[in-house]
Figure (tube, rainbow, N blue to C red):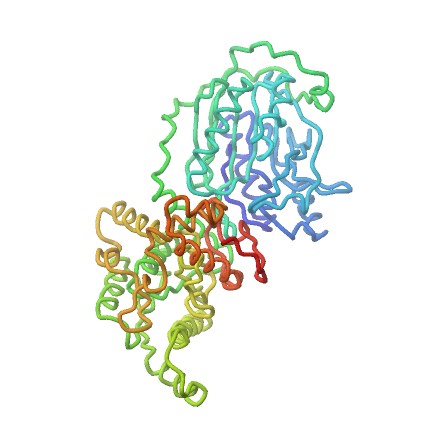
Length: 562
């Protein structure tokens, strides 16, 4: 099982990685090696699939992979084409393509859009390799009990090889394990589930490939958030007679004999260690943020990031993630004080920079702010100071960070969390200005959990203690606190989860025990801030319902549920 990290559109690079892994698997004596869904093109290629030249180049490169599969069978994900396009899995054997399977169940929800590009298949392969009968299918095909796995098992499959590009959200691994255990026991088959790993725009793929036997026992599990060639010996000593298949099950089964006899006995692999325990939730999310940030910068050609450090918890977490992803020498912090910035904020920003070992710049904004106010003096005459002056400060800071980005090629990492982005507690072209929004899908309450996790993993204080205990504030006016504009986060976050992630109705949320006016206010903030979120940079998806592709609400919208 080749748990690899492809790059979308890097056909030659992905080809070379696949060929290398085929060679490594062959050297280890494997009969079969399985690669992730669309490993050749990367997933999801989105509207690259509408470019005829991309499809041609994908098919040409596929032929080069095919020639490398000698002395071993390989299942490789790519894009097939006749009159239509197909999400496909090729069965390669001895330098030839023995079969091409077309994905049958195409997901078209959340981040998935496969019906936009692909036609579903309608044929089920049943391969025989070394005397073992094998069914092949792709990702969504295995999630449904009535899907291809059942038809292949009824036709005699002993092993199901399922290849995937299954995106991460928190505790997705537990969902997969429950589903695969159920599917293996239902059908009495061994299931090999190969998943991709790596970051692609706002998606992260977490790997965690696994093998489950026909009794539902977990035999092996790949690493989370890391590439791995997972090698396992499988034996099929007990071959129970299959339940007689219904006529319609056989109607679309294609039987392919690759090799009828088992290979001569060879030295078995050393016994595997017990499957590793899943990561704790806070560490799992932290590692997803690190991998998503690392691959977003690396795959887009950026080496260094710049983070505006406020002395607060959000920017502290973003800086810590950036250091883990890129290395301390590739992260620059910038503290931009105004007349409202406290000495504690400066001290905490500097302490964080020392703990992380990063360079920190201090660029005061007071003179620039005064110049803005002087320029607007006539227009603002006879008006009171309000949020306009607060937003000016945020926009000055955004301008300074973008100037550093332009001058030195650093990518600006924004620091807004999901609670703020949901409620619109963010400034367009200010703290929202940047190239990647690392924690845009992390609720504020979880930000604190991850910071504590970072300190625990480090065995010491990386995020300063005071950062996690002081009241959150934007410091854009005297004595400002976030709670002046928003409900307390331990109240706000459950309401946001109910409304944004769980699609609960207004009355349901009030029925959960929340104050009616508070719920109405939060929903109004979410609904009227869609135009801001539409202009935000991408960021790592870590919840089942992120604020990117997962949630597509019209900006112009008069519907109100309260």
